[in-house]
Image (cartoon, rainbow, N blue to C red; front, side):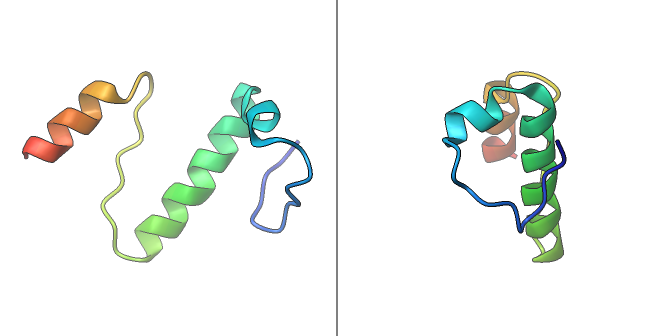
Length: 58
């Protein structure tokens, strides 16, 4: 399944993101949109807690 901004949201988000491929696609779409709007985006390869803390203290 591919993910794009036109995808309908009839399925529950939890069900959709439970598949790693879908989750990665959603993260990529959001990251791209934020980057285009001038936001600095970090994508963590694992649990993002450490990255979040490090980014806030920079």
